Length: 245
Image (cartoon, rainbow, N blue to C red):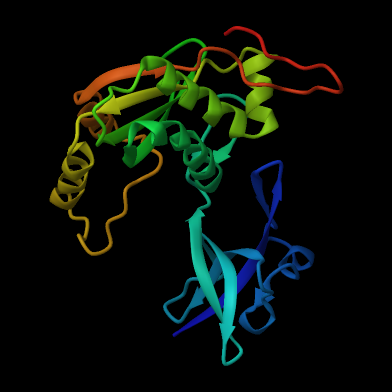
């Protein structure tokens, strides 16, 4: 019913690059199921009995092992989910890794990140990344504003050099913002998606939001917001940028 091929994924400074299956020469980059390699990431390409021909699904997969010579895959992210303000491109996996580093600042306060999503806000000049966080605070000590500001900076310094150049040198990107939302906000988000026809069994929290009604839902439940206190480090040659934003 379907034939699966795999387009190798390469990362340049954290940015996903894949071959483009257009010409015969480019089509040679496609890999059959039997030829995938352990640890390599691929974009799934499907040809179906119903008529789809080399349809690029947009799912990025990594080969994590083999069972009876059949490859086992782990879902990594959606290729087309990206934050972008200027020349920067931040995919879901890169954002997730940056958020994982940032939440380490919450550990001393016995707090955990329940869920998150993001938005590229171009209504400001310059535009900036907004990260919506739902945080569960289990400790008795309130989390100071400076800790969330450190979280903002950690995310920025974990992103690729194109983003950091836009922040520190070109000034084409504004300071990253974390918005803390009320507990239960992401449950409301799921309920809204299901009311529009999404399957509860297949629902996954979107990591990038563009749909206006969902943004309105999130912004209506924001309890506090914090900005990165300074520009991330950037190294053009041997010169270090670490200016105030």
